[in-house]
Each structure stands twice: as structure tokens, then as C-alpha cells.
Length: 289
Ligand code: AMP
Image 1 (cartoon, rainbow, N blue to C red):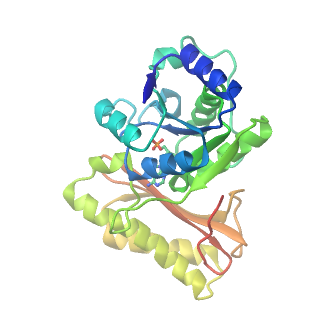
Image 2: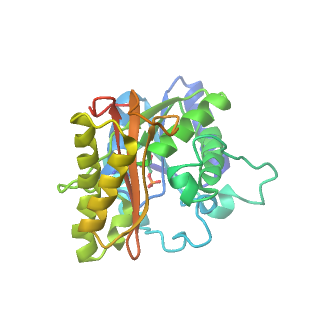
């Protein structure tokens, strides 16, 4: 596996690969790799000649009181995991390399961001679209891979690609979970033993919400309340949000839509966790491509 740390070298290498007729699959990450990331890499490996993964903890997408400086990092282990998944090139730039000077042109996400994480993490998706526009230009992918654990991110990236005509195809990959249902996340290491046990209830609460839809409940407010009640009953976490919206437009609805997302974010002492279920109007889980 090649490790590239500069923008110039990465872009030249990508250009060369494309000129030679290779397709490039790209998996952007913030590192501290786990089975969720590895699942994206596996899919990219199957569908492309070359796989490029990036590890970059993007300061622009963290708010002032968020965990940028404490975000877990483990370079050596990440390199081993990426190599094991058949990644051809690991792009590992420093902050200075990605942002050598203050940006002269600022990107701002204006749709699909006034709800869920976009509402509680102001500016987060501006940082996400900025870094992704740069990374797409640097790695020149044919296909990009994102996890549905961050379903709002998938919706915003879909807008970025369409609005700015990036010649890339977006693939969304279902959430990879621990045995008890907790979505795998780099931030799970910051859960205490007690919180780790409680954290499984986040997905269980969402599944209960889903079961209400399966049983015919059509009122989003009732479903949201039930999910909140379960989270409160079984965890010591603070609820950031529980919302039931259309997907991928993320609009509110008065009745269950053809394609909807039941999503939640909760805060434990050192980790904020998110999860969601995307469903059709009968509560059947949808596979989004
Ligand atoms: P991150 O390193 O957290 O920025 O995540 C990088 C990519 O991996 C994003 O597209 C995430 O949605 C995806 N990802 C993170 N956790 C999971 C998971 N448990 N299952 C599937 N994809 C995931």
C-alpha cells in the first residue's frame, strides 16, 4: 500500500491512474478505523481497479466545543487495517497540507442541514462539503463510498455532487453494528462500561419506533415521543434529538412518507452517538444506493 501525504503527489498519482484507464474508488474517513470503515473499503475494492482511502480529521467540521483535539487517533493500526482491506493508496495529509492558508472561497450547505446534526452542529456540514470538494479534486474518484450511519451526510454529499457536477457516483453502505446493535463508531471508545451497555438501547429504541410504523402508526409525533421515552427509560444520556423526516430531503411530515428516516443523537459524558433507520411507508428497511 502506498502512503501519500501531499496534495500534489496524490493528485498527480490519481491523474496518472485515470490516464492509464483505471477506475478509482474513494473512501474518505477520519481514521481510527473499525468494521464500518472496512465495509466501505471492501465494497470499493470489489467495484474499482484502484482504491484510495483518506484519513483526515477535518478541523472545519468540528464546532468550538466539540471533540476535535480529543478525536481518537491510531496511525499504525489504521495503516494495517487499510492494507488488509486491499486499499492501494492511503492519503494521509496534515491539516497544514489541506489548509495551507485561510480559504478564500467558502462553501455553505443550505439545504438538508436545518435539522438533525445540522441543527445541533452549526457549520458542521459546511466543513464537510468543503473538505470533500477538495478531496474529490485531489483523488479524482469515479465512485465514492459513504456510510448510512451518517445518513444526513449522505444526503448532503448527494446534493454536493449534483449541485457542483462532480463526475462521481455516490454509494451508500448500510450501518455496521456491534452484536447488541450499537452502530460501530470511532467515538464508542469514549463510553464508560455502564454507558456502553446503555448505548445499545439507542438502536433498540429506534427499532421500536420502526415497529410502531409496521403496526400502522402514521403519526410521526407519537413515534418520536415513544423513542424518546425508551431512550430516557434505559439510558443516562441526554437526548440531542429524535426526528422522523422524509429521506433524503429531510423535510418534516404529518404522515409517514414513502421514504423516511427515524434518526436520533444522544450525548453521554464523553461521546455523542448517532443512529438511524431508513424505511418505506410500511416500516420496511430501505436499502439506499
Ligand atoms: P468517519 O471516519 O467517522 O468520518 O467515517 C468515515 C466513513 O465511514 C463515513 O462515510 C461514515 O458514514 C462511515 N461509517 C462510520 N461508521 C460506520 C458504520 N458503523 N457502518 C457503516 N459506515 C460507517
